[in-house]
Image (cartoon, rainbow, N blue to C red; front, top):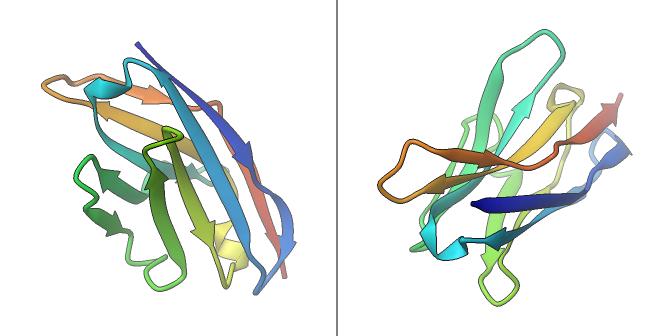
Length: 117
């Protein structure tokens, strides 16, 4: 079992920045990748960024150059630094953890990010 607790988020004007954090606990040695997924009202969940246990990162085209995913293994925490935010980035953001040799995915509680124009 993996537990994910998110922090950060909130309301920001377009062009501003926010940082999301997600602290993992439990069977952290089983985590193959951590990531961030977002869901806007009436839309499906979309992957924003992922980082593997080896440190490889991937980003959605819509956030490349603006968002940065990173992890601090000493704190078992993954971050999403979001710069140059746009109104279309408004969504509930979820932290996710994928598990080695498993189809299981664990989720954080979600946090609202609202970007005003």
